[in-house]
Image 1 (cartoon, rainbow, N blue to C red):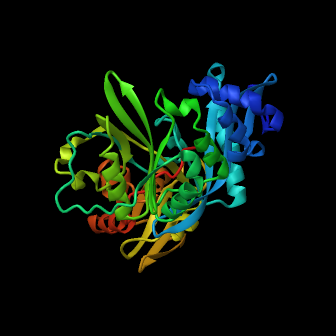
Image 2: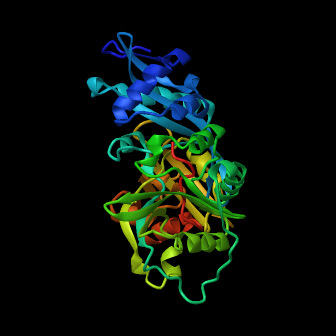
Image 3: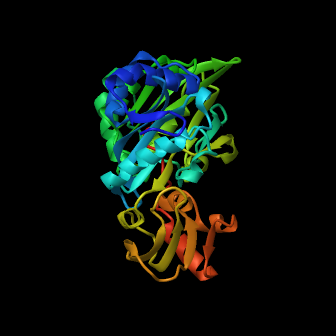
Length: 401
C-alpha cells in the first residue's frame, strides 16, 4: 500500500526485526535487553506486524496478537492486543499512524475479533481512533515501620520465601486462576513468562533482582533498593486468588526487615487501607490507566459480559474511525445480554471510546454524563445504564504489553 507522500505500508518479515527494534528504542527512549529481543517473535509474531517504509528505511510500525481476556461475569472474549506502535521522529505528521491503524483495524475486522486493546504511552492520541482508558489503578507507598494490622485481622499463614527459579510452575498456575476472575486480565503467553524469569536489567530500574513470596493461592514478586538512605521494596506483581492469600501476603510484606517503605500498585477496591490501623499510611503516589480498549463489534462485545441489573434501552454509538457505530437495542435479563442493531431511536448516546471505557466496569456512566460525553433521554435511563455496567470487582491489566 502506497501513501501519498511516497511512503509504503507492507507486512513485516523476519529480516525486519533489527530495524523494528531500533525504531522502538528510538521512539520509547530505551534499549531492550537481549532476553526481550529473543522473546519478541513469540510474544508478538513478526508476521503480524505492519511497517511503514520510506526509501528502504522502516519509519513506522505496529503489531498485534490475539488475546483471550476476561470480562465481567468471569467470561472471556477474544481481543486484538496491539503493541509497539511507533513512528520515527523524522516522519511525524505525515499520516503514518493513521495509515498503520487503518490497515491494522481492517485486518482485525476481517478476522471478526470484537475488541482491540493496548497499553498507551500517551493519553492524547488514541481517542480519535475510538479508544478509551478501560482500567484504572493507583501507585501507593506504605510506611512499613508504622503500619500495623487492626486487631481481629486474621493471620492465615501459608506464605513462604522462594527462589524465582524454583517458583515458575506455581506462578503460572496461580496467575491462570487469578486472571479467570479479573476483568481485563489476559491469558499470559510463555514468551512473557520467559522475559519475567530472565529478569532483564531494564526491568529493575536500579533495584535488585526479583524476590518471591509464595502462598498456595497467591504470590508476590518484589525488588529491594536504597534511595537516599531509605530502604524501599517495590512490588512488581501481586496476585491473590483468595482474601486469605491477600492478607497472608501483606502480613509478610509488612514484616520485612531493614525496610522503610513499600511501593505497590492497587486497584480502588483493594482492602489494604482497611486492614491497617491507620489507612492514611497508604498514600497515593500517582494514578494511572493500564489498559485502553476499543469495541470493534458492539453486539458481540456487549453480549459477552454480564451485567448487575436488568436493562432495556437503545444505544446510539458514534464511531469516528471505523464503522462499528450505529443504533443498538440492548436488553439484559438476569445479567445476560442480547444486543442487536435496531432502527428505533436512541435512549442514550455516547462515543465508542466512552462505551469502551465502561466495558470492563472501571468507570461510571454518570461521571461521563457529567462530562457531557453521554447524553441520556432522561435521568432514569442514565441511572439504569450506570447501574447495569458496574462490575463485581475492579478490572486489572494482567500483563503489560
